[in-house]
Image (cartoon, rainbow, N blue to C red; front, top):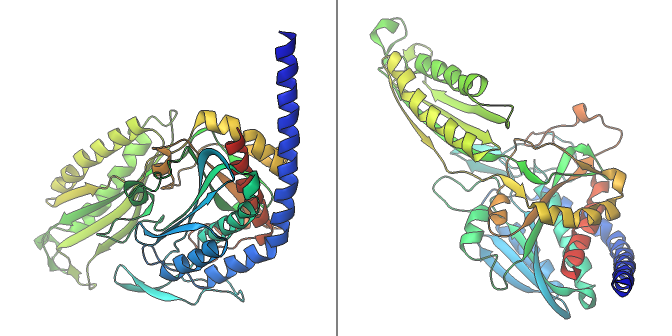
Length: 429
């Protein structure tokens, strides 16, 4: 028994010393490339591309990984890039993921690297902007690739760098994102044992990390409701079956599913209407209306119930106003679920790199992430990295997906250090 205790203590002390040795190397290498990471991010920010159209971004990433001597796969899930770094010692396989697509948002920030790119989305001309921080995710993971490639002799296993397109959703009628990557075998050959990912948070102080064991982000589904009525002159509404009036009642009814029928003490849930299209002129009551929105749930039982009630309620409400309505609900993204054991195992790494007081456990949020498709196949840990300047109040920080979205670049280097340490620590253990 005495020998066992002594051996355990020796292994613990050796592990701490080894971790500290690696930490020092990671810190030194990360600090050396911090300016490069910022430069990469600014280039990507200035040249954003929409989902499944990230051709130049993919080439930029590919060139970097090949320059580091990695084995590189391109065209994964259309525009995805995968780099494989084999350590000099045998071991497990860990994957690190960054999403690479931008959004149909016109930037309002006055930056020297502001996006002036325009494109067409859903048939409309729009600006294109990295309004969710995916540009920082790419730059951080490119930095991790450079750090770990210089620590190849310390790697006990293999690191797979996954640069994923279309996290914001593939264009209508197309496949894409993490789901397609999984379908095409991105977690195979070599088989991934665990996966890590991060998301920059514009409202969280730079230098801080937040996490949650279990469900950290909601399942997300898009839905479309088509309402059919009867067209008439605006002066004679009694001659119409008004699809706009029916739509307003449908929208009100949907909210009662949340406020009166969902057990919100169990988990949160949200039904949002994001778009309603109807009519073409002030004095014409149109024949049709379309309602589009999302459903966010943190419990699959609640998701099933809400889906069922929406399908029952929509046609019945329309019928009460003499209209007809159909509803289609997409499968959407699963719950982003942090593996309990993996989160517990890797929490000391987060606390060691960022310092314990800067690593905060939080409640789940109703945002969604297709990183969840990877987590359905292998244990995964997804966390948030602070991207807000310390002199900005959280309530004053522009939100994600907005034209004023802005990041403090000083927090990026912590992302490089953290992902690098997570990879090495996981492989060592």
